[in-house]
Figure (spheres, rainbow, N blue to C red):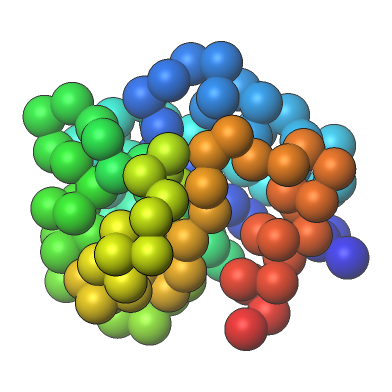
Length: 124
């Protein structure tokens, strides 16, 4: 299902980031994870994953601003960038899509379906 698919995770919460990474690696994804948007964006300038999972509440550069920067990287205009947040109201979800995210995943994630959900974003 996910052989050779790559995921960039930008999430400042260490246990959540490691959970995401572990589940995806167990499902044969190549994973690169960062605890802040600055480092993630620097990596993205020379690497292109199949999907980016981007936390909204990040230190220094939040997810909203990080998305704007990512979309300016050549070739990243339509790359799937998924907002990952605990803010899950319908108005929050609408704001993510309106801001240019390709989708939304709520925290906490369902570990048993997480890899399948990520794969669906890649294949959409």
